[in-house]
Length: 481
Image (cartoon, rainbow, N blue to C red):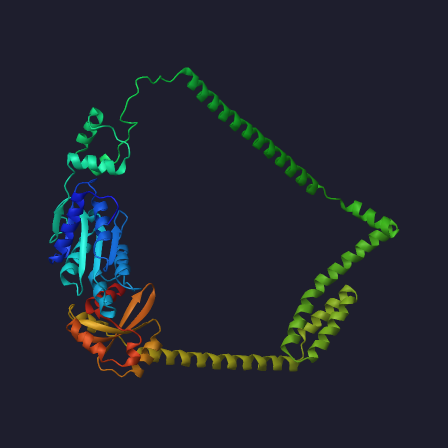
């Protein structure tokens, strides 16, 4: 029990517990905003049913059904695996079949944020839950949960209002104080208004002096100081920008200074101790060698390529041609042209044979690749799916899912290993991947599926197969299509 609660509220907590014990599984606590519904719900879940598995969820406008289902299952079962595509009741029944749940108490604060689908699921669980399940929901108006027992939370009386304030405030005005009495009367027994009492705000000091010009001067000085500080910061920032701009200009001007060619030649001449004529001769000789290299380069490249495609003996001929390029320009170019235009006959024949051999090798590799591809395609065609069969079945039937994989070969090996009569395979596209679901179906009722699961071999039971409605498989197949 929480430390501070009024006797009338404690009696209401006992009344809610008595209604649960009389067989009512779903109760709605109704009251206007500020009457203390949340505080009463917290008192109930703290004080009552200590041996139960408890879940307290406070809803808001951002609450989603998926998050609510996950929180309820996590507080009810140990390390549950929640399927987001299943409803609240389906998740509860599946998890209960795997690990039976203990008696549960769910307290949901804020029924106005519940969706119609979730309200229907709560009604279903309150009547069809396989174990003890008590559900308490708070709402601002009656009738928000059809089929639930509405228990109204009334406002506090005048005496209870003063008693509540004495619990939370140490010093209160006397009961004869007209301001205090008026405040309690105008609160109309709303605890949120009563607990918002402030002694200072409920009194008026007539001796208080109005603000003088002295405070206005302080405001003016503070504003002027802020403006002055901003101006100084702007001036320093502008000065730094100017310095940075000047540094960049100096770097650019230094990079733009390039020595002219005569200056370079004069420096070389001073270092070598030679005359200007010698320098000119050296420059001319460099130009001549550059022209020779440009003319002989195509011939050299063609000869090197020919040597790579033929026997090693051709490399000697290419070497002799490259050495001939050191001779005068006319002779070197003519020899290169002769070497290119008249290749050895043996070299051409061997080159053609090598090309033919390469083409035969490539064709053989291509044929092998095509054979492997056709073989894999044939293996994929052999295994089909039972999607049409699933779509034709009624929604009330059940199945036992044994395996779910994205590798078709794994599913084929699994089916070949376990020779079962009523195996059905569903092919589903989820998040861009193809999934193969290997199931046992059909079963008209859940009890039939449970009996069939109990008779499975131990190696299949070790994988923890679970029950799945045919309607869910049909929905997944239709979404894939």
